[in-house]
Structure formats: structure tokens, C-alpha cells
Image 1 (cartoon, rainbow, N blue to C red):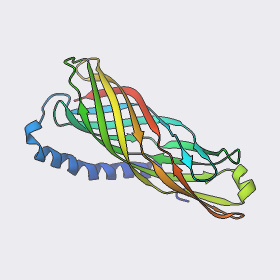
Image 2 (cartoon, one colour; image 1 turned 45 degrees about the horizontal axis):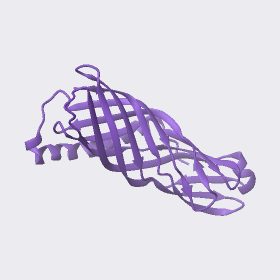
Image 3 (spheres, helix red, strand yellow; image 1 turned 180 degrees about the vertical axis):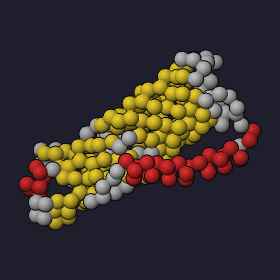
Length: 225
């Protein structure tokens, strides 16, 4: 089973940013008519992010528990109304319960980077700016493990979850405090589907299709520059 260190996670995020930055540059070239030089062109958002899965599975009635971590997003605005956002976070850790068995069968960690195209509404009010977004989420799972409760039934076991690509929808609002600082609140609906495989000594390979489909909440602050 792979072991992920902070160095692996940092390398993963940096590689993702390298892939995204050419797309941002290309968009700036293709849309010169909406080039924007306001102080809000770049925005760094950070706060508490909660992943609340509304999970479902084809067998064992799996339930993936909520988790809260540090959320971070980088926003580039092409104009007053249009921008792109890359959402990142520290790794989320989830307990996986089975309602059918009445036990916790395992746990996993994941990183859910999400790239969204955004539209910012103009309320003729500099203090409050709501926005919407549509985008693509990539979720990678790691550090999967089974519990002693599950292994008492299934024997020695290894658990793995496939990575996922899915669409996202977003609602958010910025509340300006001063020239650089804002309060921020946002919510995402994410389509995350995975196939879980438990290799067990007593039951053989158990394959489970899991629809995680979480709602993600983030409340915090942002700095514009």
C-alpha cells in the first residue's frame, strides 16, 4: 500500500499547477477584450473546508463520514465578471461504515483539486459580490486501510479506491472588508464516483461501486492583489 508524505502531496499540487497555468495563459490570449487590471485580478481564498458525502453503494450500504480540513483556492479574474478558480486542500480523512454489517470497515484519505469557471454578479454594491461556477473535479484516494472489525469477518484485507473525475457546481459570495481583504463563503456539489476493492483472505475480492457525491462547504477569508 503506498505511503504518501508531505513531499509527495506538495509535488502533486505543484505538478497540477504547472498543468493549469498554460490554460490560464491561453485564455488570457484568446480573450484580450476582457483583460482586467483591477486590484482584484488575483485572489487567494483560505478557510475551513468540510466534505459532507451523500454516499451510496451497490452492496454493504456504505456510509462515508464527513471531514473538515484547511481549504485553499487561487482565483484569476479575466474581468469584473469572469474568472477561474483552482480549489485545493490538505488531505481529507474519511471513516467508511457499513450499515448492513453494523461496523466500520475502513478509512481513506483523499485530495480533491477542482478547477472551475466562474461568473461574478454585479449588484452595484462594492461590498457584496455573489458568484457561480461550473468545473471539473479530480479526486485521488490514498492511505486506504481496513479495520480490525472488518478483518474479524473477512480475514486479512487490503482496501483500494479508484480515482475519480466528475463535474462540479458552485455557489459563493465575497464580502469586502477593505481594499485587500474579504470574507468568503462557498458551497460545491461534486460528482465523485469510485470503485472500491477489498482483497480479503476469507471472502476473496469484494468489489463495490461507491457514489460519494459530496457537498463541500468552505468559510473563510480572501486576500486580493
